[in-house]
Image 1 (cartoon, rainbow, N blue to C red):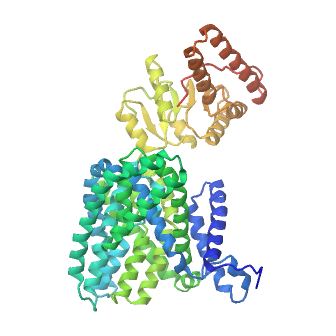
Image 2 (cartoon, rainbow, N blue to C red):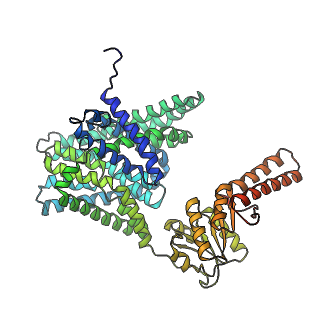
Length: 586
């Protein structure tokens, strides 16, 4: 009928996904909760086991639900491809080479030990045959690349350890699936298939490496000359999709091609622009993947088998965390790094779902068993962000505060809260003038680096009263707050001023508005970093373009007086604040 509005199922799904992203990202960001949980919850809500099950009774619900999760599978797969592409952009071949011992040492041990012990348990105590036990054991040994790496990053000790294990797991996906096929009752050419895949896959990877090094710089150079963001985006998508299809055509996983494409572009000067232009697509596609995970969770099924599912989830999480943490400790990792990484890597993976599906289609695992462990996997993926938080809490507990180097702990000393660049610079200045200090930070790795560099640094959370009490806050001549966390700084200033009315509190402020808030909270001095850096930049520009030094300095003093007067009003001060050139920048 003319004028009648019709909407295809794909358009309806797109509307639900985009609407979900528009709700989840800002709402969860407002409460500082990872949107990963939000997307999974949306999947549960709009999926076939949620509101989608009511479409027959309430037809209009079809506009806000997704009835066929299979339609989203290509987009979900694309999200994982873009994630591996982004990881490649961050790595570069040099950095990957530096991680080779972790990848093939730690990564192989983690997968083999967890997979073997799990398989032995299922074979011995659950009564599975050997093939089924191996399939399930190694399926559960995988951890989620799509969820873990966005949480851990790749540059912290936890991120590097997680990345090394996840890279090895991604490499082993195809061999494991082929082995399952070879062990299947209806297997025909399993070993031959593995051999062919390795040969052809190796040749394709070699071609990608050679051609990519020659062609990619020229391709992106031409795209950059046009100054067209659309062409740059098209070139980026061409490279990642082309490389993924090339490796997939040989039987390898498409994520191998995506990773290689990212590594090749990381060697060019265009990697920053490519990363920026692809990031929104990666985030949205990963959101689709997380929604599909939520859609696979059947709350009614969970309720019917609650005890068994809870026992299975807890058992998998505890076992994997213990094994991974122990391996990291044996390889020399800090207790905090081992504990946090172990807990973070404890849940199963999206790859677990792939292996279970392959094992089911090969008649290695029966459908009922596969569905049970798919539910366990989906729950594990859902709670991974919570495991990350738990891991950080445990990490703080297992690494007790180290002894302070060389110094009388009873003597009054300035407490510097924040052991980053700003805190270190202040420590250097205090040392230059023979003033005692101690750095306090809640990041154990940062404290470890500071101590190795010769700073007096100790682990602790300044928001907790006992950390500052232990360092002698009652006799400290001053406290300097250098962290770049405005809300925490303001809260801490108010707490310190209430408990120690005469304490000198010097705080780093982001800008003049934040400085006014800190003054109202009770800061003795609040130094707005943007003001001082702007004044210094102005001085450099004016002098270098030929303006006389005298008038420049006079105008800078006038501008500082202007801000002093504004802060006196905004900060409700009885006298003008002392604004002066400061080292609190950076």
